[in-house]
Every structure is written in C-alpha cells, then in structure tokens.
Image (cartoon, rainbow, N blue to C red):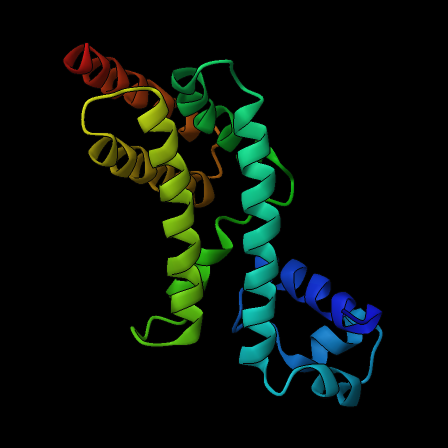
Length: 189
C-alpha cells in the first residue's frame, strides 16, 4: 500500500470516528492528510470506497487489538469472557472514544443492501464468532446463545458509554455477564 493511500485511510478513520461519515467531506480528508483531491481520487474513486477501506482497516486493527487484550485478561475462557468487558471499559475510557465506528456507520448508512452495511455486519459477526469460541472453550451450556447474549451486552454497553459518556457501562454489563455465565456453567456441569 502506498504511503499516501495509507495516510488517507488513517486520516479518514480519525475524522470519521470523531465527526461521523456525513460530517466529513473529501476536501477535509485531503486537507488534513496533506494531499490534493486529485491524489485522493487517484487512490479512491469515491468517498464510499474510502469509507470501505477505512472500515476494512479499522476491522483488522480493532479486532486484533481487542482479541489480544481479551486474551491477556485471564487464564481461563471464563475469565476471558468476563475480560471482554474490562477491555471495553478501557476502550470507553479512552479520550478518543466516539463509540463503535461500525454502529455509527450503519446509523448513517442504513440502507440494507450496501457494501458499507455488509462490512459492518461482517465485523460484528467476527466479534460474535470470537465470543462464541470463548464460550465453547468455557464449556457453557448452549455456547451460541451465551455468545449472542454477551455480544448484545457488549453492544449495549458500547452505545450506553457513547451516549452517556460513562465508561462504567462496561462494568454494569460485566456484572450481568457474570450472572449469565454462572447460570450457563451450572447447567453445563
């Protein structure tokens, strides 16, 4: 990937996170990136193409960082499942936390059959798959159901933290997750 293309993607991620997708135009991205509009259009045929590239990169970096951080929260799958919410709280406490870029994208691009929505759906499905793998390793009753419930708790905490600017939403979700996991573990035993 060329240095200019990467610079445009990095700038777009930063600006889209803070100001939204519709709140940032191509002119602003080019200006902050320090490139001309001609250079921007050399790398991306449209703003949508740049959004997709930004989402793809954010998917990869966020998911890898998230999973690595979750893995470091405990030695057992049960501990790591609860660790999801500890990692979320650290994310929510970050000065540059503006909510989930993928939730925000779907909010701005709500049409059901778009490439942007498909990219967001793919990201969420991969996070769910990771949570389900942990649930399977934890040997809980009905790992898929538990994973879906934990993913919903994570999504709810993310939106709550964004709207209320309260990172403690992650700990409320963690407490509920612990109750759910204890009940699912007893059933499995």
